[in-house]
Length: 78
Image (tube, rainbow, N blue to C red; front, side):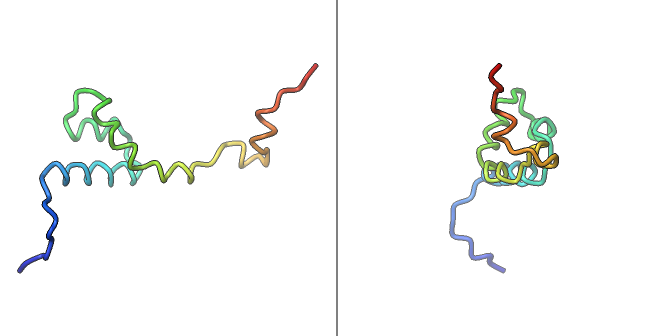
């Protein structure tokens, strides 16, 4: 049985996909670092650029209070 994959895929690509899927699933970066055997968190952080699309889903705690972000950032002049 042939999968029909024509792209040249290396083991590193599979590791990258694995780490990216874990991050997208909400797994903490420190756990991913441990699973991949990275000594430095800087090495693991390369996977965060892939998950940037998830930033739009992050809600501010102020959203649940009905306070707009503009109101929270404005300073009152005394």
